[in-house]
Image (cartoon, rainbow, N blue to C red; front, side, top):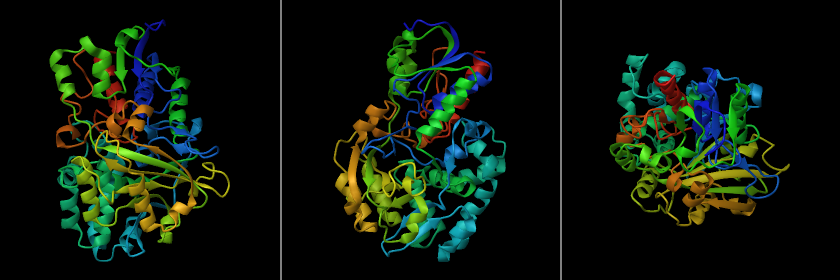
Length: 473
């Protein structure tokens, strides 16, 4: 057992959700201690020199539309603790085989200008959503509840529940708009013919118009550091490099909140959980994994479409059909010859990421959960397709297949960066009907395996802590 004084609450895991839970409890005047297995806070929000000295890479996530727009994070004085956002001129670029690119601008009207025959259709999809996003987001990024904006939620829900492929095909007639929406919806890590996959395209698209898709100056670690610094300013404590193998190891407390997935919870709670609840946890399904590469570059990526240099985030997948085929392959245990690849080029907008004149690049594709196959050639071929000469710029690369991602962060089971498959069964009731609560009084889940799911927004931790405050304190 960890020898320590008693606390009101213990939090296991210092990812963004664990820190959000800890902050919420500390703001309520509770004594809180956080235990983190890694030597630094952040979970999937960390940075390190992965390739060469002087090149700062983000270990997992890199772009944060849901963090800058988080209904909870927006209330925190994180700028006082070193957080500085960088907003690229364009949130997203999607290059095409004709040498051009579709751009998602902050402005709905500017985006429409590049969509020709689908301009008005795009306004109908995103115009109203962008206008009311600041407010509606609090209903969407929440567990099932009676919404504060019921009519808007019904309108959103009718579109969001649809398969992304069908939604894009029915709403848009041209390749450009369909490809743009498909790439955004593919962040769901679901086949695009699955119900609910359109929700991700709508949420991330609306967030781009409302808040942008920003980077953190200096690397993702600065966001985690700002959260932890604010927490400690409230009197909270953090213990790093301390893995928790059992609840019995923890100091005495009235509540324990776990920024863990169901698999880890079942391991550390063991006999404390009711058999029926433990069985429900065992049925929780993890989604497809990610195969990630970080590159140190001698020069910027030589995009065939020069407008791609205006965006930090690039989606490589050509058409809706190609993206849909790639995501379906990964879901059903196969590999796409042309995988959908998500690229981030942070050093174009943040000169602290690499030595003068040099650059960093971040990218991944989706693969079957836990699959060990090497996707380096497939990914780099996709980049070369839209940026001939890319390989000539590579000074070094570090690959992270699913097993390496899970080694860096045990919550990324099989490389699943969303905390569990967000299919219809697990989109609303995750990990099961108890949501944040467990069969043990005072024991809670606060990870991305609870509503509203994956993404760096802290809302899972916030809502779990609110439940603990109501039920225990």
